[in-house]
Image (cartoon, rainbow, N blue to C red):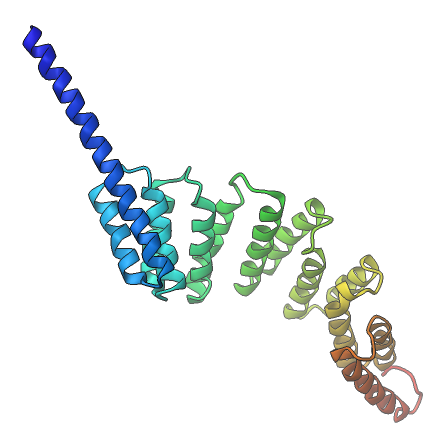
Length: 274
């Protein structure tokens, strides 16, 4: 009985020793990988991290390693398919990792450049991202990106629903003026000029004809011109000039555009919108 206890104690010590060695070796591989990365030796950095993940699959730095592998393939080696592989491994196996938010975001960003199929994958990722514990700024950013994806896929109504939720919850967000513009632009893309005009006018009122709604005002002037409402277009360009300084880039363009519209208006018989 005493011998059995001794053997068990020795096995326990051996287990602790092996575990400690593995922990140290894994940490050494990880530190070397970061050193390679700092020296722009990206392939060597990746190889070290891959060895770590395969040799010590239960190491406490596994999720760190998977993220770094994906990050290096993504930003430095420019191999998106490999980056996708490792971001997905992290997302699937380490849902509580501190890297999960960054990893999901990075994966979605890659998918955005892979056509409609990639956009649909990115859309699903953003829907999952929005369920995580996010800061207010992160939530607003991801909410806005989700709407942009809906619009790229021409799911206009869904995109507007997402943006209206952003307008309700993020009233002080720096994205609010962009959200108003995208809502109006989505109606324009659908061929609904009346709702486009209403949306842009609402944005102009909301931001009191300031620079925040400058893009909206320019689009509104273009719509009036397309519809032949020249006087309305001229008046809108005047509000644009009022919010700009003469040395700003768009000032002279707006001035020239307004002069052209006034010349066209004089050629009409009535001098009114036509």
